[in-house]
Length: 383
Ligand code: MG
Image (cartoon, rainbow, N blue to C red):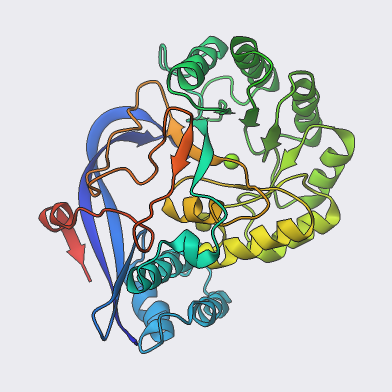
């Protein structure tokens, strides 16, 4: 079996999420948006899919030379070849392109072998508990504009929808009076007060607080018995995280966005810069490197909390021996119907039951039920 082609279809869909000037998503008027599907096919008709962006330039110049004619089961070799092409080309070949190729190859392998990806990885479970992960704060009345809004939404998420846990993303620029340690702690306190002492709660605040501000947040969250805090400072300063971990008993989770795949996570663990490590398929270049990080964490007796939702992360979560406790479900907002099925799928790929468990698909590959008719009917570009 040899890889015969890798192709991209970009299609239109209707979105009700708008981006602020800093790139954070919020509810907004419905508008056209674009999504892409990457398809890898082999000479004997097998195929694998991943929804993700793969522009024409890097596809032709970097990806095709690394994958065409190769055995699609040589994922490790292909991943390393792409990773080596990133040197001097990181601007055009970011980790997210490696992710799209790697996930499509895992999907292809699962489809060809008739097994779901988490079982190919060595499964540990078929479902994982979720946490409700909010959008960032805003100024929308009854949205996420006040500490009380976060508390009211937490009550709905946990007591009505059944989420076992809740994570706040608080206010960030460009919203007025953001960032603010005081306001972040007021929101965290309101949520703790609303849900009582037993629900695990987490905070993901503004990412560029100073050491003193991050420590003030941590001290406040110690008192509120929060489960972890992630990324309160620039992750390029590992020393700042070592300092923070030394000065607080609050579990610190990271790195999340620092580039460097499994290598940078090994350094953070060794330096004592985190209590829980973190990574998601879209941060580190795919399922292949994320499993390395899961095993790295396991070897250090440390939890790895998976960043972000989606099928790739869900399959990894169901193949980790050291949990890796939660699936991050979101981003959620009182004005957004997260349960709505994306137009390009026939059903949601992270269904959550009433006990708050997200079930991984048992269908071959990544198990996404793709609406190919919708993609064909709304095609913007194919190459
Ligand atoms: Mg985060």
